[in-house]
Length: 564
Image 1 (cartoon, rainbow, N blue to C red):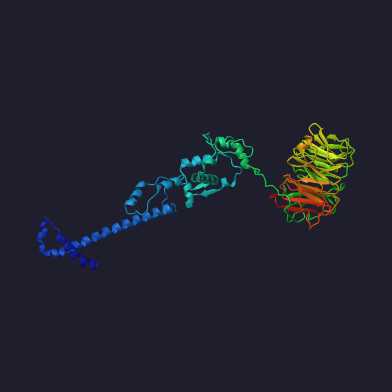
Image 2: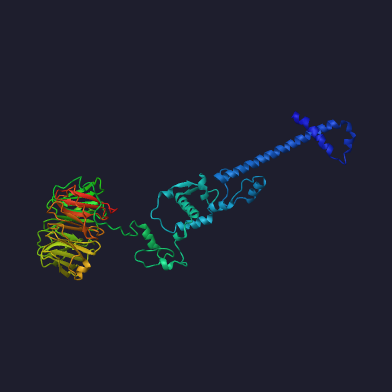
């Protein structure tokens, strides 16, 4: 203070000397001799006044600076100190802040308006999200409460400034509305509520059978929703062609490694889900295994006391298993109820064996080979006899067409019969070339081909349409087997045909159907197949299971097929 008092008068005097005072008061002129003392007191008063004014200005600047910092923090990190009203900030305050020297920062109100959830927009978006009913709703959402004022990033969901607690369902609805507002999506993904001019209508409304296009101007939104809610394949892509010559495969753990059979295996079959495998044989046990290629865990084993099993097969719908042997009766095992029912003898029939049968692809009919050339048709629902068919010779093998409306049969007269199951009439009969006694039949899943085997080991492959048209010559005669053909099986996509004979070791061949050649690297040279008796491919083609007379079910992975 002393320094200020010593230095101020000189400066004050110099400034005063420069000023001109035109009219000086009289009492100042009269007391000129005491001027120095009075000037000193006036100078001190003026300095104090200026210091007071300077302190007030500093305090005002500090308050303005603190206010500006708080406002800046609110914009950067949320409304911590003074929550800002959505879209209602005072524009004058921002202007004053800039005028007062805060030119380094400015408020981008356009961005704030875009990110904020206005009441009207929120209601519109919530209505859009509520148009379609949810597949599943959480009951806990209505009971839960969420404080959206406590968390900074949730304050944008408020409709009013003082709003804090909202219900869980309301919280989810506002989050969806906020997401839709920030991510409006692309135009092609929007469902059109009104028809609009479509410049691509000629291209996208094409009736091409190989593709289905759903683009602008949806006409059946419900059908689209049904497609999106299913887990089935929407588009079935044509798989790559299997190459002839060498078959790529790998040997896996035996399918029944956990519990091998004590007798020959007479039946193996995959369930439609491709994970469940059925095995049955002369040890009177029906076993189920879960196939994964590694452990192949056993699921269930059922003992049939009075029937050595000659054949067991799933109904194509996967609900039941039909079990038969050299008995007047047969069994039905319900997979859902885990119940075994004995059916028969059939009314009016004297057959002593029902061991040979086939099940129609539509799961409606079971066809049994009877005595003296008769074929017995049994309903899979009622298990009652619904009709009979009569061949000229003995009946030995059966095969249904791919749609289940026709039946093929062959037997002791060397001829192949085609039956119409709707009328019960034989509409076509022709000799199997080079065959004396037919022993096996099989139709391809695509319905184009069928194969017929005989007791001489010859397998003829026919084009079904040409055969029905009068052409009797087969498109291929496979002569790789030298003993009676016991089993024929096409795989799922009709590219592989398995032929086997149970009378000779390793007597199993795989035919490449497109080229009508036999795979040269099958059967495996380092591992014996023993006496093969039955075989099945998984629904996706990835697995192949073969049962032999040693009670084992050998499992193989076919590398060409990616799905089981």
